[in-house]
Length: 231
Image: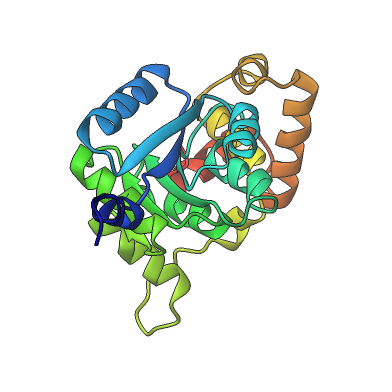
């Protein structure tokens, strides 16, 4: 075997880095994750980032990454909305939720929307790299206690905890965003500013939520949202 053949063999068999796109509305957090991943390993390569749903959808379409690291809660719709708008056009891309929340309804919402896994922001840098590589290879990855939520929600087995809430499932991601802020005491104008929508649109969403939940006012809605740990 010639020297050139000897040199080219290992290179041809080397795995290329997993191309990652970061979605989170906190710029400092994105910068920290990018720095950690870029400095820690050559197994992953951060190719882009976004802080809003619109930026995420555009950036995912432009960069066509292997894996999208996706925050669950963002002001303009959150991870489920990114999935809803991106997956139909890019079914080959894998989405991994990375969130501070470990609430069952958040986990189930993004998994139903098409995410391949869900890890919390307490994960170490090394564990995050392994999670990214694993979902890129086709595995489903969850932080330890979150896997039970998914099993209970999707497996038809005796004793499974009923994670699904038929009333909650009626609400769109945007309606949930409005409801969450409403339950936190935000005024309509503040909700409109936070979500970059008009006050009239907020009123429309609130009316829709009231109709779907068959409740009478924002105080009942706040209590309803609190009972479901949306706040």
